[in-house]
Length: 160
Image 1 (cartoon, rainbow, N blue to C red):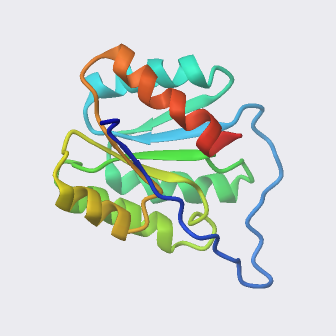
Image 2 (image 1 turned 30 degrees about the vertical axis):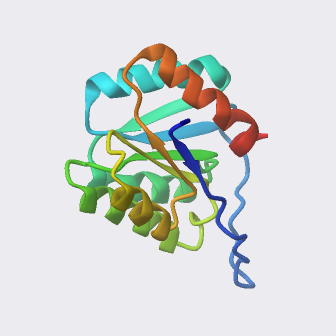
Image 3 (image 1 turned 120 degrees about the vertical axis):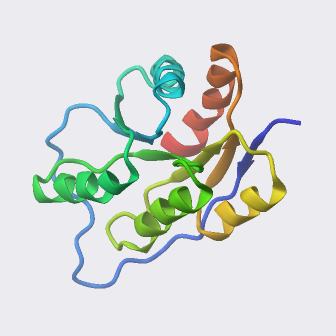
């Protein structure tokens, strides 16, 4: 079984008068990775760069810094990330779900595809992530080649 669970969230209309799209000031699209394990970050980064070579891949290891980063993008009129990957266990599942909720509750960020990545294949974790508006759930593979296989699917589904 391919261990990526996809669920496109319904399109959310923006309230009138709220501008979400910003002027482009960064030359490359950004992928934001929220991962507390440096070793896994290394594998994720290299696999992402294989499939998204023109992208800038940003790493945040501390969940409390995510909203600060996104708010700074808006303040500086820098493009928001085109894709966000959030580790579910940061180090607890509640930490990852809290980050997901904050992103999905914010008017300017809720339309960014946000995917939970986790070592857990527990159906309760998968259901919880999708219930909290994750666009997809990817079970973390063990090897670099498996990461590349997982991310090969993201390109047409989320960025084209």
